[in-house]
Image (tube, rainbow over all chains, first blue to last red; front, side, top):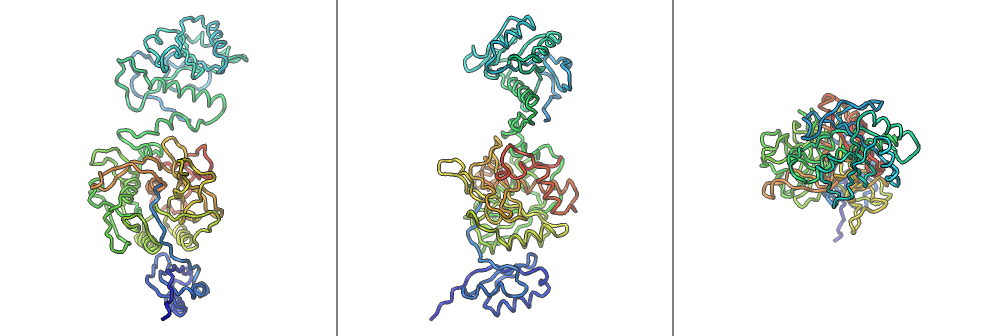
Length: 78
Length: 464
C-alpha cells in the first residue's frame, strides 16, 4: 500500500475572490487539497495536501499565497 | 529637557532662595549655593580661582570621607564642598561673588561652568533625615544639576539623564515599565477599546481581573482557556491589568479600561501552531478587536523572507476601516551562552518580521537593549518598530503559582505596546484608523541613544 504524505498548509485567498470562495475551494480540492477550516475574516483556508501536489495549489486562480503550516511557535521568554 | 521640580515643602535645614540672577532662564527652586564644574585635571587650579573670586576658605572634601560618605553637618559648615569624583565644588556664596565666579567661567581656565544649586525632591520621601546616613536624595540633586550643566555645555539632550534613572525602578505604586512609558501619569485607560491577547490563556479566577469585561476562547485542541502556563496571564496583566490591584500590589497594567479578549493559541506548554494562531487572529478580527497582541514567535535565520500570508492578513487589518493593529514580539534569540548579546543580533522572528506587524524589542530598567532581544537584520520589513519594558517586568500570574511574578522577554514588552495602543485610541477617538495608530505609537516613542536596528522608533509612550 502506498502512503501519501499529507502536508499541512495555509492558503491565502485573494481579496477579490472572497465572494467566490466556493469556486476557489472547489478548484483547490480538484488538486488534492483537503479543507479543514475556512477563516473568513482573514481569507485563509487551513487544510492539507499531498506533498506532490503542493506546487499546484498556488497556480489556482484566486489563491494569493500557499505556505506550509508551522508548528514551532513559542512564548517569547529567553 | 523637562526636570522635576518640587511642589513639596523644602527639606529641613535647606532654605529656598529666589532665583539667582545668572542670566538666562533659570526655573526652579534654589539653595542659594552654586555648583562650579571644573576640568577633571584642573581641580586644584579651579579651587584657587574659587578662593580668589569669593574669598572663601573653609573647604570640605568628599574624598576625605570613607566611600564618599560626607558628614552633612560638617559640609554644611564648610563654605566650599568639593566633590572630586564629579569635578564639582559646591560654593556657599552670595550672588555678587557668584558674579565673580561667572567672570572666571568666561576665562579660559579650569572653571567650565557655574550653575545655581537646585533643590530637587525625591519621588519617595526620605524621612530619615536625623541620621548621619548619606542623603542620596540630595546627591541626586547634584547629579541632575551636573546633567544640566553637561547638557548646556554640549548641547546634548541628555538621553540617559536623571529623569530616566528615576523611572527605572519599581515603586510602591508603579512598575518601572509603567513609569518609563508614562502610563502611570496618563489620563487614559483604553476605555471601551477591545484588545485581544493571543497567548496561553488567562487565570480566569484571578482577583485582579474580577468585574472586568472578558471574552475568551481556546483554539488549542483539548485545552481550556484557563492558563496553566502563566505566560498569558502575565501578558494580559501588562496590557490591561487594573489601576489599583485588589491584591494590594503595585500597578502593573496599562489599559485598565479596555475590554479583554483572551485567545488561547499557545498550549499550556507555551507552544503553538499556525492553525491555532490564524484561527485566533480570525476570531479577534471577527470580534472587532482594534489591537491584537502576540507575545509569540518562531525563530528566523538571516535571509529568511517574511510570511506572505501573515503579511497579507496584517496589511488588510491595518488598512481596513477603522482597522486593527497587530503587534508581535521581536523575538528572544540573541543572547549568547555567556549572557551577552550577540553581534549582530539574531533577526526579528516570524511573524513580527512582517512589515505590517509592529515588532517590539525589549529594554531593561537602565534603558539598555535586553541581551536576548532580536534586531532588524533581514531586509524587506524585518526590522524592529518600537521598544517596550521587557526585563524584570512585574505582572499578574496564576493564583496557584503565586498570583504575581517578574518575567523578562520581548513577550513582556509587547503587551505594554498593545495596552498603550488602546490608550491612544481612547485619547484620539475610537474611530482613529489603525494606520494612524501605528504613526501615533512610533511618532510619540521616546527616542533612545540606541540603534534603530535594536529599538526602532524608541520607547513606547502613553498619551497624556
